[in-house]
Image 1 (cartoon, rainbow, N blue to C red):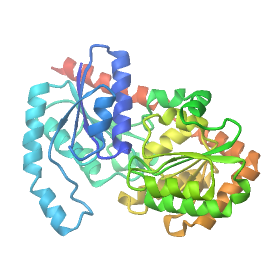
Image 2 (image 1 turned 30 degrees about the horizontal axis):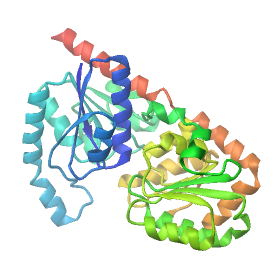
Image 3 (image 1 turned 135 degrees about the vertical axis):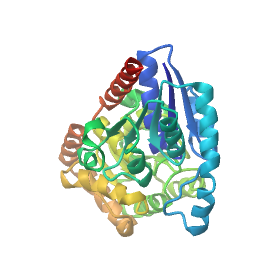
Image 4 (image 1 turned 180 degrees about the vertical axis):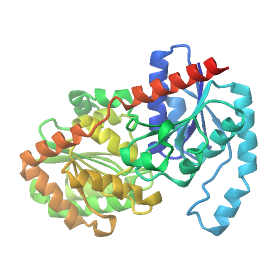
Length: 369
Protein backbone atom coordinates (compact mmCIF):
# COMPACT_ATOMS: atom_id res chain seq x y z
CA UNK A 1 0.00 0.00 0.00
CA UNK A 2 1.26 3.47 -0.91
CA UNK A 3 -0.08 6.35 1.18
CA UNK A 4 0.39 10.11 1.00
CA UNK A 5 -0.32 12.05 4.21
CA UNK A 6 -0.81 15.73 3.48
CA UNK A 7 -0.72 18.54 6.01
CA UNK A 8 1.40 20.20 8.64
CA UNK A 9 2.54 23.55 9.90
CA UNK A 10 2.08 22.79 13.59
CA UNK A 11 2.46 19.75 15.82
CA UNK A 12 -1.33 19.65 16.08
CA UNK A 13 -1.50 18.64 12.42
CA UNK A 14 1.72 16.66 12.12
CA UNK A 15 1.45 14.35 15.14
CA UNK A 16 -1.94 12.86 14.19
CA UNK A 17 -0.44 12.13 10.77
CA UNK A 18 2.53 10.45 12.44
CA UNK A 19 0.14 8.38 14.57
CA UNK A 20 -1.70 7.14 11.48
CA UNK A 21 1.57 6.46 9.62
CA UNK A 22 2.90 4.32 12.47
CA UNK A 23 -0.34 2.37 12.75
CA UNK A 24 -0.22 1.72 9.01
CA UNK A 25 3.35 0.42 9.27
CA UNK A 26 2.31 -1.81 12.16
CA UNK A 27 -0.44 -3.35 10.04
CA UNK A 28 1.34 -3.29 6.69
CA UNK A 29 5.10 -3.62 7.08
CA UNK A 30 5.66 -3.04 3.36
CA UNK A 31 3.54 0.13 3.29
CA UNK A 32 5.18 3.10 1.58
CA UNK A 33 4.24 6.33 3.35
CA UNK A 34 5.19 9.80 2.17
CA UNK A 35 4.27 13.06 3.90
CA UNK A 36 3.66 16.27 1.98
CA UNK A 37 4.16 19.55 3.83
CA UNK A 38 5.75 22.97 3.49
CA UNK A 39 9.37 23.83 4.12
CA UNK A 40 8.37 26.30 6.85
CA UNK A 41 6.38 23.93 9.08
CA UNK A 42 7.44 21.81 12.03
CA UNK A 43 7.11 18.76 9.79
CA UNK A 44 10.56 19.58 8.39
CA UNK A 45 12.11 18.31 11.64
CA UNK A 46 9.49 15.94 12.99
CA UNK A 47 8.71 13.72 10.01
CA UNK A 48 12.30 12.66 9.11
CA UNK A 49 13.07 12.09 12.79
CA UNK A 50 10.14 9.66 12.91
CA UNK A 51 11.60 7.77 9.95
CA UNK A 52 9.26 8.87 7.15
CA UNK A 53 9.93 10.53 3.80
CA UNK A 54 8.60 14.00 3.14
CA UNK A 55 8.08 16.15 0.06
CA UNK A 56 7.36 19.87 0.00
CA UNK A 57 5.06 22.22 -1.88
CA UNK A 58 4.68 26.00 -1.75
CA UNK A 59 1.46 26.78 0.05
CA UNK A 60 0.12 29.41 2.44
CA UNK A 61 -3.15 30.04 4.25
CA UNK A 62 -5.63 32.44 2.69
CA UNK A 63 -8.24 32.98 5.42
CA UNK A 64 -7.55 35.53 8.23
CA UNK A 65 -4.10 36.41 6.86
CA UNK A 66 -4.56 40.08 5.94
CA UNK A 67 -5.34 41.34 2.45
CA UNK A 68 -1.80 41.39 1.03
CA UNK A 69 -0.76 38.00 2.43
CA UNK A 70 -4.06 36.50 1.27
CA UNK A 71 -3.51 37.79 -2.28
CA UNK A 72 0.05 36.44 -2.25
CA UNK A 73 -1.20 33.06 -0.99
CA UNK A 74 -3.97 33.00 -3.61
CA UNK A 75 -1.48 33.34 -6.46
CA UNK A 76 0.51 30.42 -5.05
CA UNK A 77 -2.42 28.04 -5.49
CA UNK A 78 -1.65 27.13 -9.14
CA UNK A 79 1.97 26.48 -8.16
CA UNK A 80 0.98 24.27 -5.22
CA UNK A 81 -1.46 22.29 -7.38
CA UNK A 82 1.19 21.78 -10.07
CA UNK A 83 3.70 20.60 -7.43
CA UNK A 84 1.04 18.33 -5.90
CA UNK A 85 0.31 16.84 -9.32
CA UNK A 86 4.02 16.07 -9.83
CA UNK A 87 4.35 14.43 -6.42
CA UNK A 88 1.22 12.29 -6.82
CA UNK A 89 2.23 11.28 -10.34
CA UNK A 90 5.60 10.16 -9.00
CA UNK A 91 4.32 8.27 -5.92
CA UNK A 92 1.11 6.84 -7.42
CA UNK A 93 -0.57 6.48 -3.99
CA UNK A 94 -3.44 4.12 -3.26
CA UNK A 95 -4.93 6.76 -0.96
CA UNK A 96 -4.29 10.37 0.10
CA UNK A 97 -5.05 11.34 3.71
CA UNK A 98 -5.38 14.99 4.78
CA UNK A 99 -4.58 16.01 8.36
CA UNK A 100 -5.01 19.78 7.99
CA UNK A 101 -2.65 22.68 7.47
CA UNK A 102 -1.98 24.90 4.48
CA UNK A 103 -0.79 22.20 2.10
CA UNK A 104 -3.61 19.76 2.77
CA UNK A 105 -6.01 21.56 0.41
CA UNK A 106 -3.92 21.56 -2.81
CA UNK A 107 -2.80 17.95 -2.37
CA UNK A 108 -6.30 16.62 -1.65
CA UNK A 109 -7.92 18.61 -4.47
CA UNK A 110 -5.31 17.31 -6.88
CA UNK A 111 -5.88 13.75 -5.68
CA UNK A 112 -9.64 14.13 -6.24
CA UNK A 113 -9.03 15.42 -9.79
CA UNK A 114 -6.77 12.42 -10.47
CA UNK A 115 -9.36 9.96 -9.14
CA UNK A 116 -7.21 8.81 -6.22
CA UNK A 117 -9.13 7.67 -3.11
CA UNK A 118 -9.15 10.47 -0.53
CA UNK A 119 -9.85 10.87 3.16
CA UNK A 120 -9.59 13.80 5.57
CA UNK A 121 -9.65 14.10 9.34
CA UNK A 122 -11.30 17.08 11.08
CA UNK A 123 -9.80 17.67 14.51
CA UNK A 124 -12.04 20.45 15.79
CA UNK A 125 -15.73 20.80 16.55
CA UNK A 126 -16.20 23.51 13.91
CA UNK A 127 -14.33 22.67 10.69
CA UNK A 128 -12.08 25.21 9.05
CA UNK A 129 -12.71 26.60 5.57
CA UNK A 130 -10.47 24.09 3.76
CA UNK A 131 -11.99 20.98 5.31
CA UNK A 132 -15.53 22.25 4.80
CA UNK A 133 -14.72 22.57 1.12
CA UNK A 134 -12.75 19.32 0.87
CA UNK A 135 -15.56 17.49 2.63
CA UNK A 136 -17.76 17.94 -0.45
CA UNK A 137 -15.33 16.05 -2.68
CA UNK A 138 -13.34 13.48 -0.67
CA UNK A 139 -14.49 9.89 -0.18
CA UNK A 140 -14.35 9.75 3.64
CA UNK A 141 -14.41 12.34 6.43
CA UNK A 142 -13.29 11.29 9.92
CA UNK A 143 -14.17 13.60 12.81
CA UNK A 144 -13.01 14.02 16.38
CA UNK A 145 -16.36 15.19 17.77
CA UNK A 146 -19.91 14.05 17.06
CA UNK A 147 -21.01 17.68 16.63
CA UNK A 148 -18.73 18.01 13.60
CA UNK A 149 -20.82 15.50 11.64
CA UNK A 150 -23.44 18.20 11.02
CA UNK A 151 -21.00 20.00 8.71
CA UNK A 152 -20.47 17.04 6.37
CA UNK A 153 -22.48 14.53 4.38
CA UNK A 154 -23.73 11.87 6.79
CA UNK A 155 -23.19 8.99 4.38
CA UNK A 156 -19.40 9.42 4.30
CA UNK A 157 -18.63 10.89 7.73
CA UNK A 158 -17.39 8.78 10.65
CA UNK A 159 -16.85 9.57 14.31
CA UNK A 160 -13.37 8.31 15.20
CA UNK A 161 -11.81 10.67 17.73
CA UNK A 162 -8.42 12.30 17.20
CA UNK A 163 -5.46 10.00 16.42
CA UNK A 164 -2.91 9.77 19.22
CA UNK A 165 0.55 8.29 18.76
CA UNK A 166 0.72 4.87 20.38
CA UNK A 167 3.88 5.78 22.30
CA UNK A 168 2.02 8.60 24.09
CA UNK A 169 0.17 5.87 25.99
CA UNK A 170 3.41 4.15 26.97
CA UNK A 171 5.08 6.89 28.99
CA UNK A 172 7.14 5.76 31.97
CA UNK A 173 7.11 7.91 35.11
CA UNK A 174 10.31 6.47 36.56
CA UNK A 175 12.18 6.90 33.27
CA UNK A 176 10.77 10.39 32.89
CA UNK A 177 12.04 11.47 36.31
CA UNK A 178 15.47 10.21 35.38
CA UNK A 179 15.68 11.64 31.86
CA UNK A 180 14.25 15.04 32.80
CA UNK A 181 16.34 15.18 36.02
CA UNK A 182 13.31 15.52 38.26
CA UNK A 183 12.70 14.60 41.91
CA UNK A 184 10.26 11.67 42.13
CA UNK A 185 8.94 12.92 45.48
CA UNK A 186 7.81 16.35 44.30
CA UNK A 187 4.52 17.45 42.77
CA UNK A 188 5.36 17.99 39.09
CA UNK A 189 3.80 20.61 36.83
CA UNK A 190 4.34 20.19 33.09
CA UNK A 191 4.01 23.45 31.14
CA UNK A 192 3.94 23.72 27.36
CA UNK A 193 2.36 25.99 24.80
CA UNK A 194 2.47 23.84 21.72
CA UNK A 195 5.42 23.00 19.48
CA UNK A 196 6.60 26.63 19.32
CA UNK A 197 5.84 27.59 22.90
CA UNK A 198 3.36 30.26 24.07
CA UNK A 199 4.78 33.58 25.25
CA UNK A 200 1.66 34.51 27.24
CA UNK A 201 1.73 31.23 29.18
CA UNK A 202 5.50 31.44 29.69
CA UNK A 203 5.30 34.95 31.15
CA UNK A 204 2.42 34.22 33.47
CA UNK A 205 3.79 30.92 34.76
CA UNK A 206 6.96 32.83 35.59
CA UNK A 207 4.91 35.49 37.37
CA UNK A 208 2.87 32.83 39.20
CA UNK A 209 6.02 31.63 40.94
CA UNK A 210 5.99 34.80 43.08
CA UNK A 211 2.59 33.78 44.52
CA UNK A 212 3.43 30.16 45.36
CA UNK A 213 6.82 30.57 47.00
CA UNK A 214 5.51 28.73 50.07
CA UNK A 215 5.45 25.59 47.89
CA UNK A 216 8.99 26.02 46.60
CA UNK A 217 10.25 22.94 48.44
CA UNK A 218 7.33 20.71 47.45
CA UNK A 219 6.84 21.28 43.73
CA UNK A 220 8.89 21.28 40.53
CA UNK A 221 8.33 22.20 36.91
CA UNK A 222 9.00 20.63 33.55
CA UNK A 223 8.62 23.61 31.23
CA UNK A 224 8.78 23.48 27.42
CA UNK A 225 9.25 27.12 26.46
CA UNK A 226 9.86 27.21 22.72
CA UNK A 227 13.16 28.58 21.40
CA UNK A 228 12.39 32.30 21.77
CA UNK A 229 11.49 32.32 25.47
CA UNK A 230 13.94 29.72 26.73
CA UNK A 231 16.53 32.04 28.26
CA UNK A 232 14.20 34.42 30.06
CA UNK A 233 12.05 31.60 31.51
CA UNK A 234 15.10 29.68 32.73
CA UNK A 235 16.50 32.82 34.36
CA UNK A 236 13.19 33.47 36.14
CA UNK A 237 13.13 30.00 37.66
CA UNK A 238 16.72 30.39 38.78
CA UNK A 239 16.07 33.84 40.27
CA UNK A 240 13.07 32.55 42.24
CA UNK A 241 14.86 29.40 43.37
CA UNK A 242 12.31 26.93 42.00
CA UNK A 243 13.41 23.46 41.00
CA UNK A 244 12.66 22.46 37.46
CA UNK A 245 13.85 21.38 34.05
CA UNK A 246 13.47 24.09 31.44
CA UNK A 247 13.73 23.01 27.81
CA UNK A 248 12.96 24.70 24.48
CA UNK A 249 11.37 21.54 23.05
CA UNK A 250 10.98 17.86 23.82
CA UNK A 251 10.31 14.96 21.49
CA UNK A 252 9.56 12.77 24.51
CA UNK A 253 6.01 13.86 25.26
CA UNK A 254 5.04 10.41 26.53
CA UNK A 255 7.37 10.56 29.53
CA UNK A 256 6.60 14.25 30.01
CA UNK A 257 2.92 13.39 30.46
CA UNK A 258 3.86 10.42 32.64
CA UNK A 259 5.75 12.55 35.20
CA UNK A 260 3.11 15.30 35.25
CA UNK A 261 0.73 15.62 38.19
CA UNK A 262 -0.70 18.72 36.53
CA UNK A 263 -0.45 20.11 33.00
CA UNK A 264 -0.67 23.77 31.95
CA UNK A 265 -1.14 24.17 28.21
CA UNK A 266 -3.04 25.55 25.25
CA UNK A 267 -6.12 23.63 24.08
CA UNK A 268 -5.41 22.46 20.55
CA UNK A 269 -7.21 19.35 19.38
CA UNK A 270 -4.13 17.14 19.52
CA UNK A 271 -3.23 18.37 23.01
CA UNK A 272 -6.77 17.62 24.20
CA UNK A 273 -6.64 14.16 22.63
CA UNK A 274 -3.34 13.37 24.34
CA UNK A 275 -4.40 14.77 27.72
CA UNK A 276 -7.61 12.73 27.76
CA UNK A 277 -5.95 9.57 26.42
CA UNK A 278 -3.45 9.83 29.31
CA UNK A 279 -6.09 10.98 31.80
CA UNK A 280 -4.24 14.12 32.94
CA UNK A 281 -5.51 16.98 35.09
CA UNK A 282 -4.93 20.24 33.27
CA UNK A 283 -5.26 24.00 33.35
CA UNK A 284 -6.12 25.01 29.80
CA UNK A 285 -5.47 28.46 28.33
CA UNK A 286 -7.10 28.51 24.87
CA UNK A 287 -5.27 30.40 22.15
CA UNK A 288 -7.71 33.23 21.34
CA UNK A 289 -6.81 33.60 17.65
CA UNK A 290 -7.32 29.98 16.61
CA UNK A 291 -9.55 29.53 13.57
CA UNK A 292 -13.21 29.47 14.58
CA UNK A 293 -12.13 29.97 18.20
CA UNK A 294 -11.84 26.19 18.27
CA UNK A 295 -9.44 26.09 21.22
CA UNK A 296 -11.97 27.72 23.52
CA UNK A 297 -14.62 25.29 22.28
CA UNK A 298 -12.23 22.41 23.02
CA UNK A 299 -11.34 23.70 26.49
CA UNK A 300 -14.90 24.58 27.46
CA UNK A 301 -16.03 21.06 26.60
CA UNK A 302 -13.62 19.69 29.24
CA UNK A 303 -14.23 22.49 31.73
CA UNK A 304 -18.01 22.06 31.67
CA UNK A 305 -17.81 18.45 32.83
CA UNK A 306 -14.89 18.80 35.25
CA UNK A 307 -12.18 17.22 33.06
CA UNK A 308 -9.99 20.35 33.26
CA UNK A 309 -9.86 23.92 34.51
CA UNK A 310 -9.84 26.79 32.03
CA UNK A 311 -8.56 30.37 32.07
CA UNK A 312 -9.35 32.68 29.15
CA UNK A 313 -6.26 34.18 27.59
CA UNK A 314 -7.52 37.70 28.42
CA UNK A 315 -7.94 36.72 32.09
CA UNK A 316 -4.62 34.93 32.42
CA UNK A 317 -2.32 36.41 35.04
CA UNK A 318 0.23 35.19 37.52
CA UNK A 319 -2.37 35.50 40.25
CA UNK A 320 -5.19 33.64 38.44
CA UNK A 321 -2.81 30.86 37.45
CA UNK A 322 -1.30 30.54 40.91
CA UNK A 323 -4.80 30.25 42.44
CA UNK A 324 -5.56 27.20 40.29
CA UNK A 325 -2.14 25.66 40.88
CA UNK A 326 -2.68 26.07 44.62
CA UNK A 327 -6.18 24.55 44.32
CA UNK A 328 -4.82 21.37 42.73
CA UNK A 329 -1.84 21.06 45.09
CA UNK A 330 -3.98 21.48 48.18
CA UNK A 331 -6.77 19.11 47.11
CA UNK A 332 -5.51 15.68 45.95
CA UNK A 333 -9.13 14.59 45.51
CA UNK A 334 -9.60 17.33 42.91
CA UNK A 335 -6.66 15.95 40.95
CA UNK A 336 -8.02 12.40 41.14
CA UNK A 337 -11.54 13.36 40.07
CA UNK A 338 -10.29 15.53 37.20
CA UNK A 339 -8.05 12.70 35.98
CA UNK A 340 -10.93 10.23 36.14
CA UNK A 341 -13.25 12.41 34.06
CA UNK A 342 -10.47 13.30 31.63
CA UNK A 343 -9.64 9.64 31.05
CA UNK A 344 -13.30 8.85 30.38
CA UNK A 345 -13.18 11.19 27.38
CA UNK A 346 -10.05 9.66 25.85
CA UNK A 347 -10.23 7.89 22.49
CA UNK A 348 -7.03 5.80 22.37
CA UNK A 349 -8.59 3.62 19.64
CA UNK A 350 -9.02 6.56 17.22
CA UNK A 351 -5.90 5.77 15.20
CA UNK A 352 -6.97 2.17 14.61
CA UNK A 353 -10.43 3.29 13.48
CA UNK A 354 -8.94 5.70 10.95
CA UNK A 355 -6.60 3.07 9.52
CA UNK A 356 -9.51 0.61 9.24
CA UNK A 357 -11.53 3.20 7.32
CA UNK A 358 -8.57 3.99 5.09
CA UNK A 359 -7.79 0.38 4.21
CA UNK A 360 -11.48 -0.34 3.65
CA UNK A 361 -11.65 2.60 1.24
CA UNK A 362 -8.65 1.33 -0.73
CA UNK A 363 -10.11 -2.19 -1.00
CA UNK A 364 -13.50 -0.83 -2.07
CA UNK A 365 -12.02 1.42 -4.76
CA UNK A 366 -9.84 -1.39 -6.11
CA UNK A 367 -12.91 -3.63 -6.19
CA UNK A 368 -14.83 -1.02 -8.17
CA UNK A 369 -12.01 -0.86 -10.71
